[in-house]
Length: 253
Ligand code: PGA
Image 1: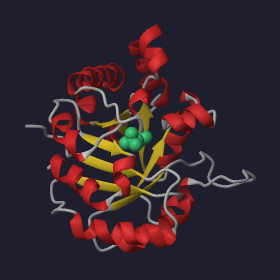
Image 2: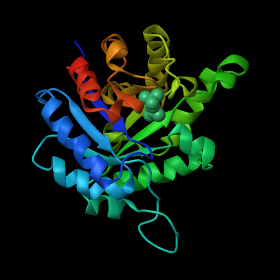
Image 3: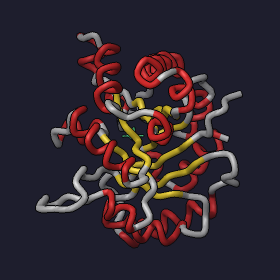
């Protein structure tokens, strides 16, 4: 029996206009089970955050952003601050997603600045780590994942650390339909937790939730989520369809 409360987050990426977001959320609110034993977070694009927050306001569903800047305000064209996210009722923010690392130059150091700024603004960061196929085949990818965890969460401890969610997403499993086997995922989740324990102490590490991400779908969710150190899922493609996402949430309960 796991003591950590499972958390399922839907990462909509660059999908859904306002009208489309509204139909998706309305569908979800019908399909979702009782959420007494699971946290559910929707992460739409910035433009739909306020709308989605409004639509789920009377439900236990929470809203998260897909990125943010570490400064509170300033001359940073195109950026959004934690204060602005709080202003539209965000409670979570995804940081260091592999697509941001790969296409937009995100580094462990920038993820760390953002994570600290998010926590200071009472936003829970979902900090993503994971290896590419090349790294898995050619490098010490476990060492690389340990470094991602250590550097992305540097100088975060105690109560703040317990607010953090780590998402392990093997990059080769994202959007490819090719998921890690439950045993492969569990092995890296245990490694992430051991790294957190070295950094923050065993007690804190035991409380931090670690999500798996990468081609999670209704058909594989239950088996993945049953692993000892897997406390939820970060879902991309399958979060864009109400019934499928609700089925993943049900698998977590
Ligand atoms: P996927 O995406 O579920 O479409 O593989 C997961 C993610 O990128 O967070």
